[in-house]
Length: 372
Image (cartoon, rainbow, N blue to C red; front, side, top):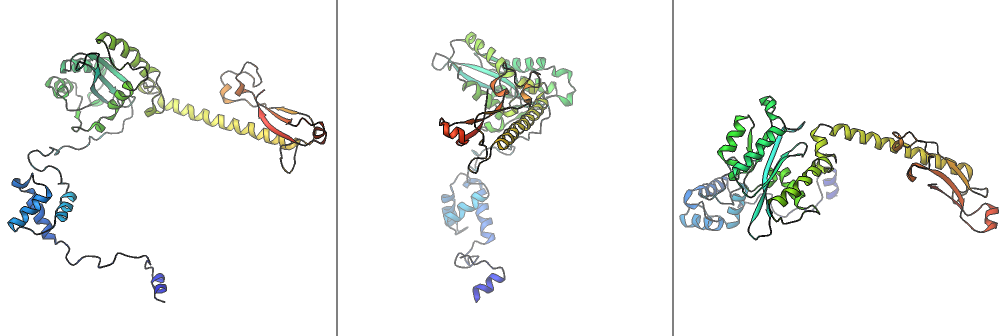
């Protein structure tokens, strides 16, 4: 039959869209060129695709539908502003972030508003962050949002990390947005004199500088964050202990849950490797305990319904002579009563029935692994 011949030849039997694959009245290549030429003319750069189509009709330059012009402009990413108000995106490309291998290879910084108890009056939080370790290298709070404060922040960071002692090719690049403080000549000259490349992110694109934006979200989303500050001294008293905790005690999810200070010192690979080793050791120890429990239960009792039951009445207790990896450093025996409950294990095959006849018959028993 015909459908079998189609199947044997590998032709799909699915229903297809009726009609020819290419419409006979499809747009010609030269018509597409005419639409783009009209859209690129300066007098018509601010017109919408509908008005642009009408102008083409009036001038006799082209005769196509609104939807055709829309599809052509959208394919060329020309549906936005095309005139003098267009976005100046000649260099508006995402910054290329090279893979980091250690601390002080890339810094980022920004300024955030801090609310006060007076409406319309703000404090400003300046933060300088290392992208590799997420460590807050420097921070300051000020009543002013000026390049002088930004310069203080960067200079303090240079001294804190001894950047001037590094070779010029090993000094960090600095990412920031395009605010007045970042584009100030004093800031640009400071970074240029110290051979630290300054990279400006795209306008209105916070994703280009995500790490410093994330820390502002973390700071203001903390449960203890007061929300408003009375004055500069109160803000400084709050952020001093907070950033100390953030750098030295806070397990950061973006760096394998080590603290920023540990990552900054290069300890992250060793910590992660040690965790993996101890996870595997604990897994092997857990397998040994479960295997011993199963062997003891099967040896002392087998029934069709429950292989762990004991044929003989009474209670069987088996102590497992395995050492948990959690106790490697303590060196104490597993049965030490002073150890945590999870560190000691025994296997108990219990008679759970209160009936003396069932006890004598050795039925209605179950096995379990319980702590002592």
